[in-house]
Length: 154
Image 1: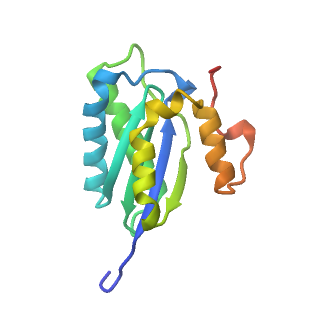
Image 2: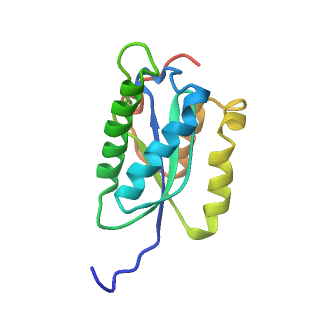
């Protein structure tokens, strides 16, 4: 739409079904490139992507004309198919249902980018569960423990 100007920054986080450690280090760069293509094809701007063995984080400059839910749904569906076609895992790969999304101001981008870049280092200090629940609480997101994610013992 003409004369529409926005600045919307969203960090989305989604996990491997059952929180299994299936995202092997040697495949992550190719997966990141594939997800980057999905985001760009949807006319959003991928600012940063990173993953560890059981989850992915993306920071997106989002356009207002496509719902975030639709973008994450498309990323998860297409990247699942991509991973399965590549046969990177035994059996069938799937992402868990749902995702987390958190908005940031432009002034916080550098800090969020650094945090995303240092995921492996952060998870040496805090589990994904601790980190994720901490984000929900920091952003005052109401949630039901039963439906956050399927947690495996960490």
